[in-house]
Image 1 (cartoon, helix red, strand yellow):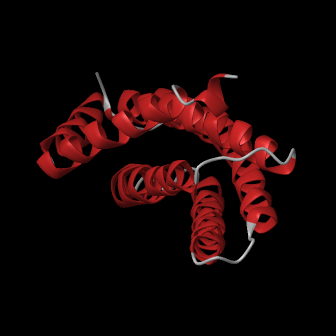
Image 2 (spheres, one colour):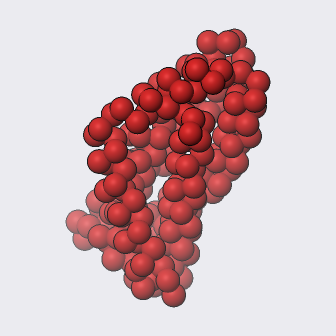
Length: 180
């Protein structure tokens, strides 16, 4: 197992979340009800997994390692911009979700920003997977892969948080609105 493998595994989990987000916004646009608590769980996974764990792994370790070889810097810069775009979308999902919880009908903006996030994820993950292939084949040494892998694995709080996140994704995949 390598650092790149962990990031690819993250992407598989994110693709599961993307399917949930897709179904959620489609149902919202169709006028079906999704429990706000389920949308909060989606919001939680976006904030805690994508931003706090996955982007941190990429930005703080992986991209820094690749950039140290003066390689793929343009791609890394674009990914950093896309990560910031993702954070802004997530902030809007949270903003309109809180309004909705407080009694304002914010179904449409929640659905719109979930849709935007789903489109972003599909595009972004495809580009990053190609980037990982290049970085792994051409740039990062086995020793660097191992060192980053050990760093990713050593943060116990991340392991605990990942368990909670996977439980949330499992829960959402079993909900009637998602399964139907």
